[in-house]
Image (tube, rainbow, N blue to C red):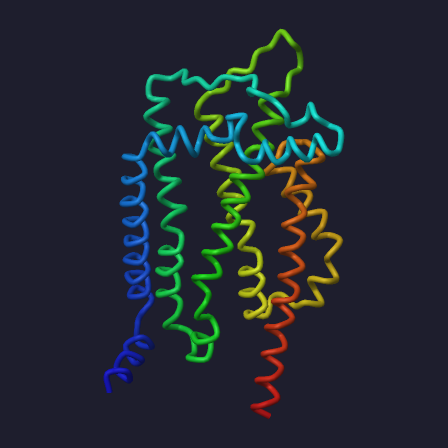
Length: 278
């Protein structure tokens, strides 16, 4: 009886009731970000000295690996160095405090991402059928996993490649690189968040296939165009360096191929259900 009543109330919810429901989901999501951002704010030394300024150090793991690869290939000067030739400075009164606040919020968003997905799922799931709910039980786990893998890829691959290229680039020996703190942090933040969201491509394709907007044949047909889009995306989130663009584009291409496989699996399930009903 209780379940029936719940179903009835869900069906009878007006547009304003849905908006009210959405408002509370958004409030809880924002609250989670604020709480985690507050913790990140208190952990200032770890967030900045270890995480943010980590890719600026010559002993960063990525540089060590790339240095060994460069030595093996014969390009020792590319990634083998003892110090990056630039300084980071803050040229405004509130620059450091503002950077502290926004970096904490970014950290809060990244850590709270699974909970944000849970709140989105709670809002969407009442409108789904029981079969659809059961088939998407692992949605939060898989989407969160892909996001965190993307964040790690952005931090350990995209960020150091960008910093190494832009930090060492000079139009003349007379110009010394002194980067503003906000510029440096925005590069790290954009690389990490963009990579995390790009890695959600399989989830996006799954949803679009479920809705009927995308098919595996369509993905195959526009594969060449997609490769061009991938290269453009790689160029946006990385510096204009061919090696960096290739390194970044490879996992995106792999994700695209995985998305085709996922789309095909969704279509096959739909076809099986149609056969059973007939």
